Length: 386
Image (tube, rainbow, N blue to C red; front, side):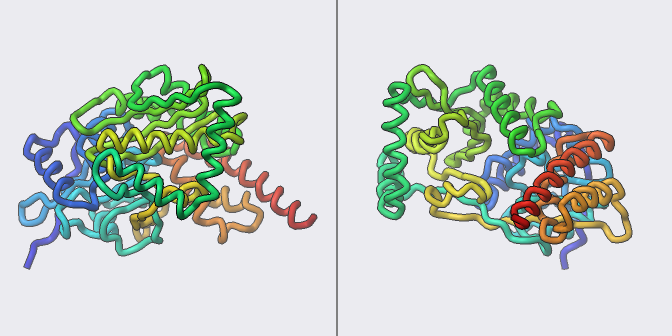
């Protein structure tokens, strides 16, 4: 019978050359680990920047069977880079990864929160991520994909073709560039995202600083077939849309998009996505990952899904006082709709907890989010009463 699992917590820079070779062999052998977030390069870079970063080495009978990169926030543990990590799990050979519940027990944390666990879980709710699989290799793969999508969703894509003509008529010829790594352009994108968070009442994930530094470091890395870059769409001389993406091998992960709100009628973000896919297909990318569902436009692009798990594993008998207080505050602000909004509240708290590194900062973030939740609840109640 196999021996029991053991765990060792180390800093990423303590992993040996043999560990790094094994890590890469695991991601190459396991198709579930195709996302750039599972690459050793992502962990190596993130571990230098993310507060509380560590790697759990899982072993059985003296043999390393997996690695789990993570971060600590007080008594809680999250995947490394949360809330910006769109896929996470144990780096292991196919069939070797232990369930999430076992990992949580070995880590001994009061709480382990995951939003997109890949691999066996033993708990949690299923979520679907959306992606585009191009039908064939070569430059024709995008043309074949677009022809199928246009036939399936003709009205939608004809509308976007009209939007392209309107944008060019209004501002001038459209130009799209990809593979951009200008740090000034990235700061502009981050500024647009922060404006968006302020308009929508979401937690500003870039206010903490380390999240901005992570995007810059990933973009500056340029390690083999792993990296990050931006694509931008100009109409005439005006930059109308921009998106930051992570990529590895033949997978391209759309990550942080932004566009000029005043040009929404011309759909510059959608046009940028279409052209980025066309250019990316010519560059050899085969899978375009759109992350979690939510934005309605994704259904028109995506012809494949990947199932992941969202879960919060609580250690029995251990009270996560700050988390309970913060989530309670958000629930009370939801106008008595706490049970129905539980998932939304937990996600909001997980983002705050991941970004903010001190108890005071986390509680202030929860209080600010509670104010936003209260306003929304009052607005919903007023609409119902009307």
